[in-house]
Amino acid sequence: MSGDNAERLIVALDVETYEKASKLVELLSPQVRWVKVGSQLFTREGPRICELVRSSGLNLFLDLKFHDIPNTVYGAVRSALELDAGMLTLHTSGGTEMIREAMRAVEESGKRQVMLLGVTVLTHLRIDDFVTLFSSTCAPREMVLNLASLAQQAGLDGVVASAHEVKILKGHLGKDLKVVTPGIRLEGEGGKDDQVRVVTPEKAIEAGADFIVVGRPIIAAQDPAKACQRIFERMRSAEQRD
Ligand code: C5P
Image (cartoon, rainbow, N blue to C red; front, side):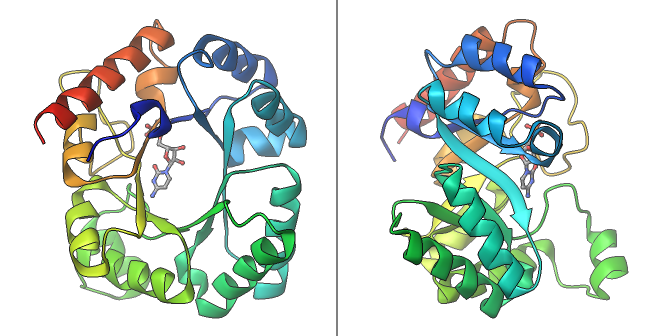
């Protein structure tokens, strides 16, 4: 798959404060198009962090992983759209009715270009967790496919899933369903932290990921701008192999 790599890299702004986020935005905005604001930063800093992102000319992925009764999720999505988010997440396991209410909020706003993504299975979970949490011996891959299929049927634009599952998702559900993949690590660099099923940027792109989400390998690097360049190089190398 070819395309503008800058459009396909999402940097996770997983830092504690507005000041740290602001420094990263300043460093990265010349080369990056998307940044992701998650619950840590948003809970502390609130909407002003979204304003910082948008006023820097970046697209905002507001990753608050909504999971509540349909009426509450409808209201949460409406609020997120007021913050000018271009991508939003909700837990697919919230069910079809919850997803439909989220979509109704997007439709009513007239912002049909906003991507509404379903979180399938969080990438830190191991097979043992599946038994404990869901009394299920279902393989993670099967669980991801079931949830992604539900997301698609309910009308979501895409899903968040490990790069390990991209091929099977695209194979079963078609290329139109966007797949956003976190759990990205450069080979030979650092540990996996709490991510269990990690993949390199080139492998994720080769597998067909539409977007890759990268946090610590960029934001915790000595030189985040350089780390970002290295990720772009890896993405390019994958495209050249196509
Ligand atoms: O630092 P790292 O590259 O592991 O960051 C991954 C980001 O992707 C985090 O912000 C995390 O919340 C997010 N994420 C994830 N697994 C999912 C969904 C989102 O790691 N299934």
